[in-house]
Length: 134
Image 1 (cartoon, one colour):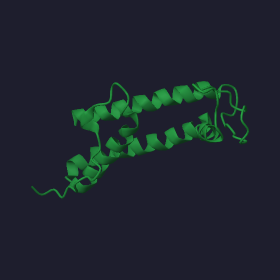
Image 2 (tube, rainbow, N blue to C red; image 1 turned 45 degrees about the vertical axis):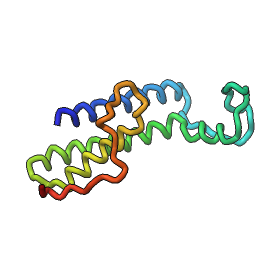
Image 3 (tube, helix red, strand yellow; image 1 turned 90 degrees about the vertical axis):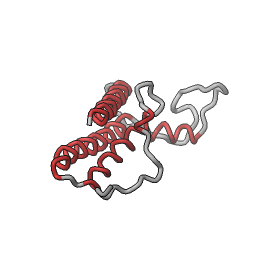
């Protein structure tokens, strides 16, 4: 459970970082960004000095308000998994425990490029079902 506790702490800390960035980007506005498909509405520069319409669309989907809503939902999922794990460890429900573990590991996958991410947290692409039998 200690490794799982580290994973849960890790994921929650990453969500806190994202929230801080989104709130800083939001500033004194509503935080909702819009893309009107016109170059120049969002001023960013890559190595070529150009931003495509596709870049604008991606940036617009990452507006701070949407990011904050996404984080609210993800935190609810983490909290539900933690509550489920606390109850089920006493009840020996292996299938549900396995699912809660899988969800927590899957949520951490987004942060695999972070220096604090551990390789043992990687999610198998085809997890083996846990039946509770040896």
